[in-house]
Length: 423
Length: 165
Image (cartoon, rainbow over all chains, first blue to last red; front, side):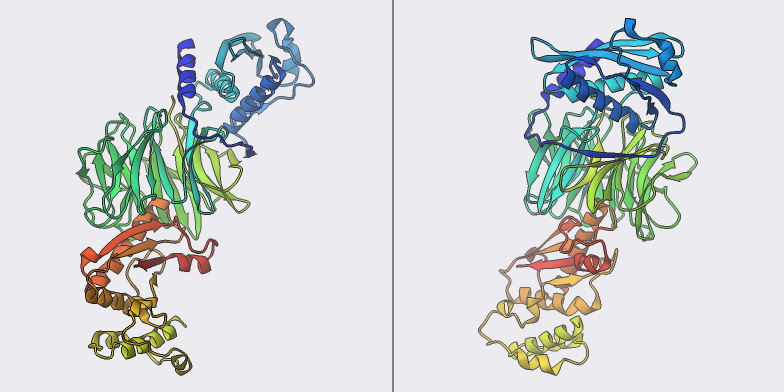
């Protein structure tokens, strides 16, 4: 466990910061989960300022999941096990209690030690230490939230993962990488030409994306550690919609080099180009299944945009969405049993999920300007682009549709978000 | 209104290129021209490159599409054919055709649709006499909207291919 924490911290440290925006976000949470765990999270003792930030991050993360309900502390603030009176917390209806302390160490690192207590059984569930560089206080908070989440739900936490999106402000486009809650924005690329379709490599080390900086759509692959980048595809017309295979050895891209937009496979270094679809109409937005065996994609071969599947090496294509309206932007769930996509009907966009086996569809959102969904790596949350107060924003919805969160970035329109992998 | 303007421009084109075979342009000419505007726009001198004549049909560089459609519409065909003819007569000229879309659809689907809109204009330019090698096609999808509203007034302006010399 300690090793894993260390490894993820090292990953964070290696991120090259091109620039850090002063991220003041406005976050709204809408709805509540069906079975919420009542949890009391006591602000840590020790360094007050660090404790305050960590508390806000942990509370925000757990609430956003829809699985937790904060319990009022009523002025109680134990930091040590010896200070905990279980009956007090039972009386307040808490099932779980988090206490701890945080300190800035002589070497400049932050160390947080905390305990997760089962109030009902009056027992310690977990005791952990998390540490990070002095400027990574939010990362400490996300790690604490992940450890609490994992212990209480049995699922892997995703709060410490990162997201990528494009911010558009007037004619200026920026490719942004941020924490899962939208904070800690780092600009990977900024220019006055459009940027589209960021895609994470499976190990989180690279982003592929589409940039128009040379006057047309070209696919690039960029290292987030060194910022070095290579051209993946630059044929005439449009080069777009990059997607990584789960093993990171292949990429699917959409090219118009032979006519209409068709799907090709290529290695991440640009070699070994091979055409996969031959429809002569629009085939785009390929996404690999978690086992790497098949691709979902959007096509208008039936007259309107619908979702189809094809074996990853090419072969027989099958339509998978039916019914009224158009469907776009499919992405498999991490367990491969379903997929999330954008459903467009009667002038509104919705986020929907479909079961692969039985074809059952569930619309997760109320509808509006909701596009480009992607699953968190644990499959429990979905990130998508939405619109509120006249701006493009980031939003999440729990995979059962019960809890939504709107994240207002400081300025501009957030577009094309995609959730990154576990580091 | 758009049709009227096209008619006026067609009349001017015919006048400017009196020595040329007017047949294909005339065949595409729609109904009654507006007399009032014809007076206002005098035919340009023959020596002037018609491309630089604001009254020439070649001054029109944008064609528009219905939702999720990429075929050049009848009303815009004369414009595209005139550019094809111009390119035929000026084989050293090269152009870019830029396809654009409204924001309905995914960004990637619209990129593909915009490319198809650019390609369909290219095909008609070739039909009008241009060589394929004179034409580069690109798409901006929904990324560079001319109008930014969430309404048909904006969307209709954004479903567009631009011919750029």
